[in-house]
Each structure stands twice: as structure tokens, then as C-alpha cells.
Length: 101
Image (cartoon, rainbow, N blue to C red; front, side, top):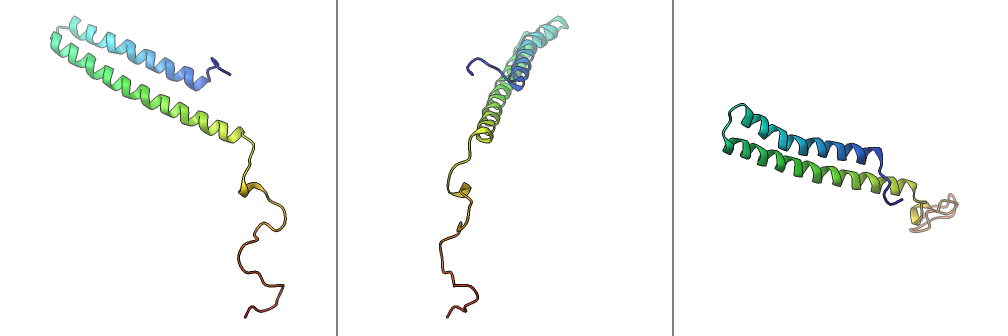
């Protein structure tokens, strides 16, 4: 269903929000305690880069998990799923215990 989020997607969204919050909070705290503006800006850029990479990895993981769920729920079809008698019909077959010359 469109718009429906799974608990893992909500958790990933929460993690990204907290990471974005720290990208702002950490440089402010650094400036408050006397760090240089360049140092705080570099820290902010580093945190933003790490957050962006983590967000990409989380989204890929969510898509992979969704794909696996869809495959597990989909009806099984194809050659390997037929079953029944006479499943292996290729190759040489002898009749019973008759030796093959």
C-alpha cells in the first residue's frame, strides 16, 4: 500500500533525523566551548557526509528487505516448482535393471 511505512522504515527515518540534528548540534556545542569556526564547520561537513552515506546505505537495505519480502510472498512459479512424477526427463534412461551397452 502506498504511504504505509514498516517499523524498520520508521526506525531508519528516526536515525536519520537524529543524525541531522547532531550535524547541527555538535558544531554549536564546539563553538560554545571555544573551538574555531573553521573546526566547527569542518566537523559539521564531516558529520553531514557520514549521515548522507548512512542514509544511502539504510535506503538500499530497506529496498533489499522489501524485495525479499515480496519474493517470499509471491506465488512460486517456474520449472523448478512443478513437482510431480517424471521430473527428470532428460538424458539416457534405461528400462529398469537392464544394463546399458
